[in-house]
Image (cartoon, rainbow, N blue to C red; front, side):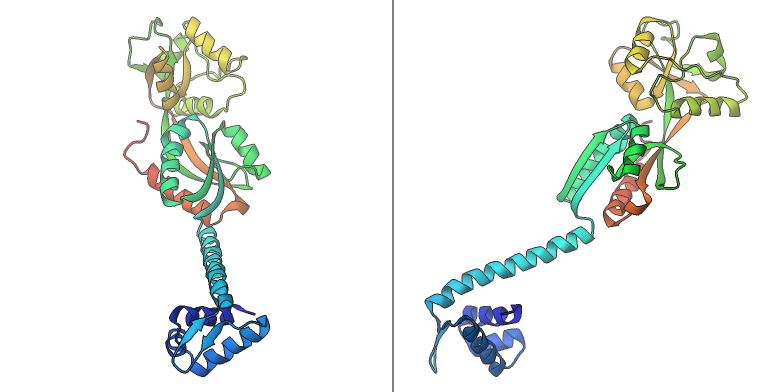
Length: 299
């Protein structure tokens, strides 16, 4: 028994007419009769009552028709699933983003993918850039949204947008009433350029922008982790630095945000493993590039 024999059986069973079934299948009526006879012989069953004027299903034929319809529905579904998987519309996607990328790109990306790829299982997470790189290299992550540029031959990346670095101070800090802080004024204040366990992206951006402007700044990392770093900012006249989205979160918690002049910028990149660049990842990258063209994201 093969699909062709079942297809012929279904056509005759639904039309109850050999001539119309033959036209539907683009074959001769004698070919239809031969296929049906072969199927009945294989099953050892009579599927139709035939007279010179009528064709009727036997009880066995009626039962077989119901099952044959299920078989063809399952076949069509299997083909659709395979085609969707090949087109990146179905499957599983693990994607992570650092804090600014999660606000500016990941959240709108999830909405788009759920609309355009309803059969896709998304596993989104917020994860620091350094941890994303490790998971990408281990094959545990499909796409990362992290600070760049990326210097690893096993990873590919695409720059999506730039985010400003801002200064963050407590509300009682002498600078809290200001809207702008010049990089050239920083040496006159106590500041921390990074905290333990953090990526060096913000610190690197500060140093590079100051150097271009001819301003000498020193790296001044904190030995404490993020919670200790935030506590110091909240309880002393120390200047801290963050991405603009993280700064907006700090503002909601009572801190004051200052724009820096000249303005250091952080690059946000989409990152993926070289061997992982398939149709699904490519579809995600196209969505991200489209999102990144929105007017002045995060500004």
